Amino acid sequence: MTGHRKTRLLLYDYLRGTAGADDERAVGEHLASCAGCAAEAESLRAFLRVAPDGSKKPSASLDDAYWSRFADEVAGRIGEEAVAAPGLFERLLGLLGLDRISRKSGGVSTGISGGFSAGFPSLVPRFSPAFAALAVAVIVFFFVLPRTMERDDTETMVSEPETATEVVTEVPADSATAFDQRLYDYFKRSKALLVGVSNMDPAEGRAIDLETERRVSRALLREARYLRTGPIDPRSYRLLSDLDQIMIGLANSDAGHAQPAVDIIRDGIGEKNLLFKLRIQETAEYRTPIVQASFKQ
Amino acid sequence: MPAPDERDLIERAKEGSDGAFRSLVERHMRGAYDIAYHFVGCHDDAQDVAQEAFVRAHRGLSSFRGDAEFGTWLYRIVTNLSMNRIRQKKSRARFEVRSDELPPGLLGTDVSAAAQPDLTGHIETALHELPTLQRAVVMLRHLNGLSTREVGAILNCSEGTVKTHLYRGLKKMRKLLDFIETENQ
Image (cartoon, rainbow over the protein chains, first blue to last red):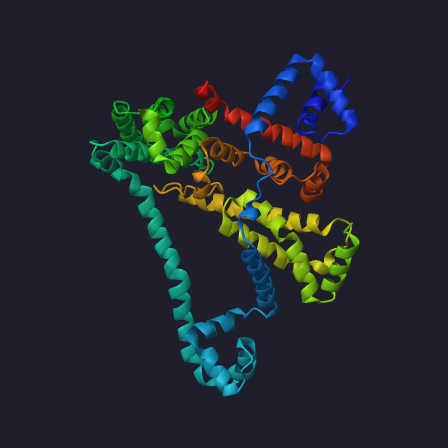
């Protein structure tokens, strides 16, 4: 008779009717005599009944005109690739508009690379110092400055949770919509915090500063206390309670022992599947404020 | 091994026939798009990935020996590109998590998916929680309806490995969705 492991690996094909005759018979015999595997089969059968399968093709929703365009675009992309990609120097010329000058001076009209090879040699000796200065300016402007600005943005982002308290207390709570919005904001902020903690990857021996996380988790605990008094659905209520446990752990984490605290919190997040539940909650919020409102009635 | 008429198209495409390659595109574009869509979860990315896969297939056509079906070879390119696209998205999200605005499509699920009925949306979300290889197997085998052998050829693994990943992936999805079932009881 087929063993448990083999049976379970064959269950999918067995239930979908794609197993071979021998496998089908062997699995059938095993299920008749094994309650554990039979329960597993029933659970999978119930799941497959509701899970979307390959019968609905995303491509079927697109019309023939789209597919004709699709094939044209592929041909276009292949054609573009066939044209030699310009080098760094040529792209720099393009940025400075010198590629056109070089094409004119060389009398070549077959594209950037042709223009460069024919016209640039005559241009370089006359303009090389000015050109070098321009090139440096362009590199600084396009490559160095944006990176510096990106760093500034990140710094702003890290300090952003300081405004958490202001945000959560500003929203008026005098309507169902305002409450929904406030609940949604709470989940979104909780998710950002949890993902941040889950992704913490400090260098070996480097201390972790959880001050911001502590402050935000306290603000979220206050917000959760308020939300619990409102018209909240059962699932959100349970999620609030689960999140509270994590937030309390985070709010009380010892500054001197941040790494163990992070590990414990991560375990808690994983054990309760909190990120998954938050994502579910988030998509539910996006989906149907109306359904949610009727659910609460 | 490609079917005789497809083999002919491939040979002519290798010799530089644009028409022959276009015929191959027209034969496989829907399948390529479907696979990409199930991975990346939104139309724009799926279109881009599928088109890019054809461009790469065209570029690498001379190295296609014809041991496998052209479709299998193409779908492997689509799968690899899709998984790279998801990794890029995740990696971007990782560095943006400290911001308040986490994108709703963080794991490849488009907001438009949210328009679907509740359970379907939850199942999609659960699917995107699976490890990469398990997700790839569930998508190719269950959502795209490819055979165990085809999935093994695309992912370059044995049929036994495909079955194992399929079983584990579906089990994990059921476990993730348990709490919803409990609530409904």
